[in-house]
Length: 229
Image (cartoon, rainbow, N blue to C red):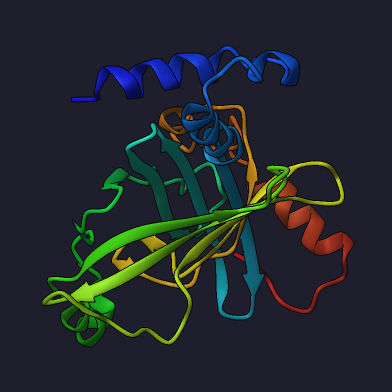
């Protein structure tokens, strides 16, 4: 259950106060509001891949919420093969989440990827904590995820982090490395901000009906030497 302080911070953040009004907020609260303004967003990425080995779709969505005391990260992540098209073969990814309180260790989500049993065992019983850095002007920042096993820092080859910044198109981007996803830890990618709640994304196919004929026509128009389907 959230504290009264956290609930008040979330309410103030939701008001989207202009800069001049934020000067009225006490300094110890203003810092948390600045962190929330930068990080509390939802992001999405959907990619379709075609090649000699077949065709498949990758779906990833990420939501970050800081309440002044803890970080809650919700995510959806999966991929599915396309025997027909993105509509007919669509698979909805499960919604998962984990929470880390500031200054406390939290369990890393279970590793359940059957394709990588060795890595799953290696990451078993890990704990994690979050540390945050951000530019003074609030234009970029980074959440670093630190891993521990038996209270001892646990080394990993890749940095585990979520870098928040704005791209050339003035879109907020979450650049994730070693993000917590389906089956545990994996290298992430770039996700673009979306106004849609993560609970609503990837719940239905991108297209409203079968598009197999359109894809086969595209295949013909491009004069490709192989069939995607």
